[in-house]
Length: 164
Length: 175
Image 1 (spheres, chains in turn green, cyan):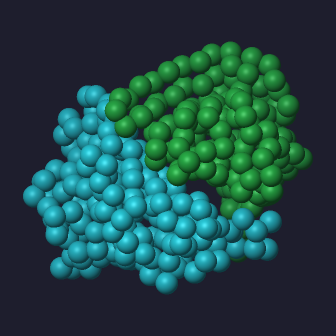
Image 2: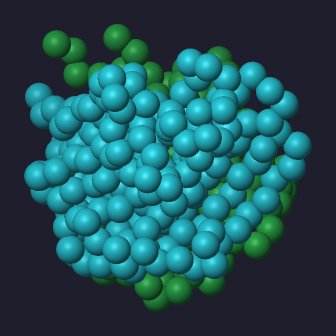
Image 3: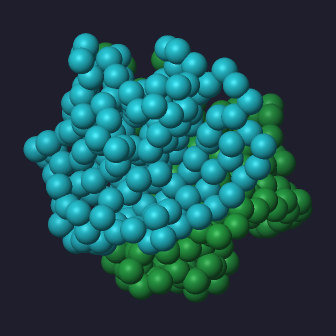
């Protein structure tokens, strides 16, 4: 039986850290799934991805968000990262979790999109779509908050899915 | 090669219905849990809630909801901050279009760890009418115990109808 869902790499932070990077990602999968678990109260800001070390203004983000009181949607063009979480002011009792699907990441013809869901039960719910305006295959993914460090115990796991 | 994504258990409701779907004795050998469901209840409503609990616990839950019904979007803290369960996953009720079932997914990262358990819920109802619901829910069970059982219960003591299904998958981060 062909394994269609593989763990490519996983990292658990042993100390607070400003970013995590998955590098040398093989092009042998069809899609990528990144699962992020940010330990309690470690950041107070948005979270982003950057692909292939691209820090340019080549990303666009569309957000659907609920904070427990209101629903809202925002759009950012020419951003310097693919935003996947908008969890400001988390409390000490809750963690941020996010599941990010990166489609057709290895093709060299189209720009790359992802869809993400992120949650913090004390601050709200996000559903986001991002675009990276680059046709290169994604070979590295950097995960980082807009400011601050991600706490010890935070986990990051990258899965690959094969369409076969 | 490691089996990364594995079905732990699956349930299909038979004739007569079922008051709940429960997964018990969940081993701690995975990293994350993922549930996919297709459910319909016999409650006399178009849409209905599903009551979600773990380890038969009736405390320390919290949730925030974002939903749209085809005409507007809103966000809420359901039940005014009720802590006895998580309730705003949606299912179809008996007054929804015949033969339509609601779909949903529940993702629980780090379910066997010693941190509080954050949970992601997505659910949609189906109905051949102007209104249907898409709901995203952030939940937490503020307990450090490993999750060893998960129960989905019909609201207001109603039953899930025949052909309702739910499957529990385990995901391992073994490289």
